[in-house]
Length: 207
Image (cartoon, rainbow, N blue to C red; front, side, top):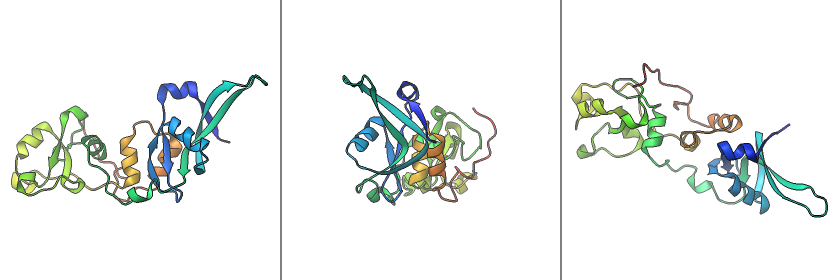
């Protein structure tokens, strides 16, 4: 049986709905209002999820009963909403980069809060290095300054982990802090084998 989350609870945490294309490929996060629109327009091809959201409407003058709409937390929407983006490399941002690297400096191995981390280019941009997932890692300020405009080999600073580009499923995990258990299970099953979602980095202390 699907458990429903009342909208009063929803207003506090505001969990997002995971939107898929009709083939079941993850597309994006949408809010419950967008999901309600797809339900109202009969654009939800199928849905799944152990947790659900119940939205309440107005009361009927004839019956006095209050209307409601049940939303699943994972919905497949008809149309080409996710197909074009499925194999596109996700956008690189500091927020998702630091989460990919679990807020751990790639050089000293300590864990930091986001405000103490920087985006380090393994091959410096001044040397032709690109601003892409495979050439960047999270680095604390002191390590980034010490490495300076050099490669790890030139600076004698060994990389503690290998950078990689997350796929769409992992990127959606990195984007959202509040993910329901059924959504996480769905996305986790679709990340690549190299993902740090499956293979966490060992940490020391938080700075």
